[in-house]
Length: 247
Ligand SMILES: Cc1cc2nc3c(=O)[nH]c(=O)nc-3n(C[C@H](O)[C@H](O)[C@H](O)COP(=O)(O)OP(=O)(O)OC[C@H]3O[C@@H](n4cnc5c(N)ncnc54)[C@H](O)[C@@H]3O)c2cc1C
Image 1 (cartoon, rainbow, N blue to C red):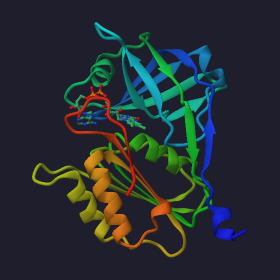
Image 2 (tube, rainbow, N blue to C red):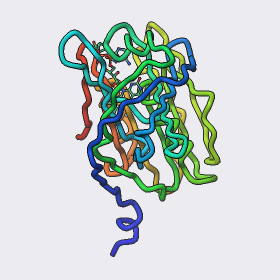
Image 3 (cartoon, helix red, strand yellow):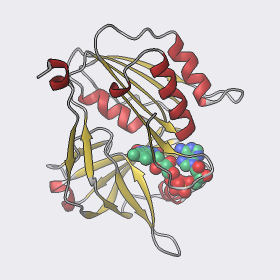
Image 4 (cartoon, protein in one colour):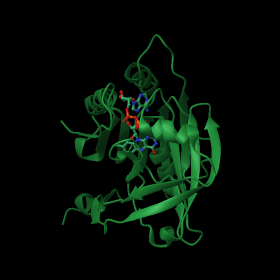
């Protein structure tokens, strides 16, 4: 078999769908608009999440049926029975409202992950691009990559100073400017980034139109489509939006 094909096989894994009831144990403000909430529960003893871009459903109580939103398991420890979730706070929405008001001792139900798509850590380099909603998945990937592998991250609207990695990590933190959109600012920053030699994997997640724009930009620069993954983690004006972005 072709060695290249063998090398970069994405592994798709299904998981038994489980709901778990978690209790808030810690609340830490990472940035003015980002809250890291630490949960604990005996039900986390068999929690599984093999991929950095897995998502779990969070169930937020409302007057009607609970509102479900997608979040990334930022870090977890089945032995300690803990799970960290980072919440990007924005103007309105059940997730934002719940996180902003959360107190130690509050409870929250989660479901999943239902499945994982595991991109093996066998590429020569990585480029991870996104906004603050993608930062938990980006931070987790940087922490999980093998020692010494080059990884560049371009993140707008957020910053995570807690990332610990043995990979060769070059972070680019981009501050929003009112006059420019996220796509424009991220593209401008990427313009001075030469893609390294060898076979690389590019991962993108942001607001849906931003992620679509950046995926096109990356492929226009000649990066192979099959080694590019892009997702809309939210959509302007639409609640609870998740979009897989393909050509
Ligand atoms: C796979 C996946 C993983 C995700 N992981 C995380 C994560 O770890 N942390 C995280 O913070 N988010 C994450 N998100 C994004 C999160 O699910 C959405 O931002 C979600 O819409 C937030 O729910 P809400 O109840 O706060 O707002 P909603 O009720 O869904 O939306 C209300 C309004 O707010 C807007 N809106 C939603 N998100 C934002 C935003 N970030 N900035 C500005 N406006 C917004 C919507 O367009 C809508 O108009 C992830 C999304 C996906 C698909």
